[in-house]
Length: 591
Image 1 (cartoon, rainbow, N blue to C red):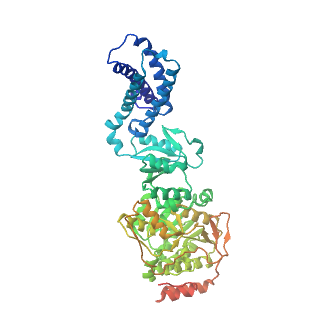
Image 2 (cartoon, rainbow, N blue to C red):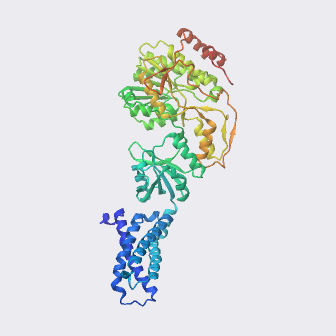
């Protein structure tokens, strides 16, 4: 019984057809009665059924052609009224042509009766379809926004179904075909027309679009052009369909990460899985932005055991909630004794060192802490890994280590030199260098978001400043991929794509929030140690690997006994900058 009462497209079409047949019967009789002052001639009845059959057939066919039988109550709009009017015009034009050919079929009807019938039929059929929309469903639809869907695929069908079921606060009124979907332009999905991408402007203006949902895979360039256009005409509510791990889908706001994300084409998940699967992995800095994502990736690729180290109680607790099977150790990498004890007890196959101080101005203001954590801490991890006979140690480095101008970048360069030149015995040591990751703690994107939400201003240090960006998950996968192919002693560099101007980034984020007229941008000047441009290479001696996204930098030789003495001097020096310059001559400090 419930299935009989449940709405469906077939039942809806059948209802409308039967209703139109009854309305046509009523309006035809009423039109004749009105024309002749309700004095019905007995001669009227023999021809009535002939006229009714012909006229009703024309109307049903025209209404079907103009998709008026596929209307959904709650989404009825002025566009649907226009289609009903078009259907009536076509039906009555066809009927008029037949009338002119042989009017004997229609005696005693007069042409004026047919004109009356036209208006009565149009008004009653349109009223029937609009009644529930404007009386019963008005409040419901009033809270929904006329929406354009980009992409004509199974996701689109699901979105329309969700709208019909009232699960999302949007009602689709048009669909734009995505890349590779050109073959269905002009067709309909649940009575919603599919348009060419070239018709975007026309559709937005004529259908009163207030929101857009992206259900198609657009190239980054297409997405940027598309978003710029929508923002330019005042549409800032842009959603995208995100696929969840359980294969379900959800709507979420389009983010700046979507516009900046660089998707490497040569991610080799099989190589990563072979590297991680059934291995015991210890991760330092496991609660940070990079460390926590590496934890997730290791879990995903089937590690047999995880040991997570972090000196932040809160960060360690957070990642521990995600991975309850992991062993949690709240310790600092500057404590060599505790580090040795953990290594000997856990006996990791792989160590991934992500613990570091990364905030440039804070490291400038706290040089002692930066050197102790980044240099002494990393040296401790390397030495402890060698002592524990770890198979492979992966050091996370940064593009700020290239021709550094700040303490943070220079400390990372010192650790690269130590990793490349230490006597590693059986342990394969590899360092991986990359640029900024989107949305990491302390990065510019969360800061801009907060400033925009507070009404501004957005602070940009310099109009010409650029940075490299990559998504955290993809950067971490490339780190693991590079480590998987390492033989030991390499310094890998990840291809970060083209650098992005921070000023353009700020403008784009403001547009995404629809606050171009509300939020201003101010320039605050370069902070201590900051560079206008970051680099990934010291020279042009890098080597290619089998992956286009991964390169190997040339090795810088440094006698290990001298390097160890220089590091010891650095750790005890009062003048950290001078001691750092001794190890890294290219360091040009910009306080």
